[in-house]
Length: 241
Ligand SMILES: Nc1ncnc2c1ncn2[C@@H]1O[C@H](COP(=O)(O)OP(=O)(O)OP(=O)(O)O)[C@@H](O)[C@H]1O
Image (cartoon, rainbow, N blue to C red; front, side):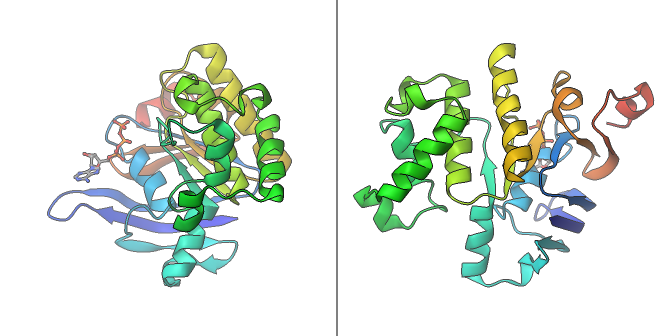
């Protein structure tokens, strides 16, 4: 479970972009984040993944006080709370499988990224997850020859293989055609239920949030103005965003 209490983020010399945001997320929950441009959606995800410093607030992952941890403890949280960018940063000239095994800068020690050394259990674990995401036939293809949806799913597999308990996905389906977007969100939802992973995804456009999320939270000018079950939002709720 994760608990965010009164998260506040200020831009030095600038505005407060997140103002006392609080919510809980349970294992296996799919939470969509909505809010207009500039409302703080990406900043919220980046704060959860410790990509940004918190100015105030408390943050607990499985009961552990994250902000009181030292460097190594925070690095572990950055593996457990994987931040997926809109266009995932992958090694373009390596295969999907290599990307999943090697991981990102925060996921794998530098020597393993440089040597590319693969243990047989790493190989089996990666292939298993790639298969669950329906990409077995693409495992040995270079990622720069993959579609946007395939790259998204490789990034999801990579996060899971490296122990993600929370996937914080920033606009994971923006720019994808509706069929591919359905595949990516369907995979995320299934993994969330099967593996108890928490998914927090920015899904402002269209009706993706209403269709896939267990819960929808909404931001307006950095404040949490909505926290409801995943369902069609009323006109009054939409006006708050
Ligand atoms: N590094 C930064 N320096 C200054 N302002 C920033 C910085 N990062 C974010 N902001 C400001 O914080 C606010 C929230 O930004 P954020 O990227 O979280 O918005 P968003 O809701 O994700 O928007 P969009 O839907 O357009 O991506 C914006 O007003 C943005 O200009």
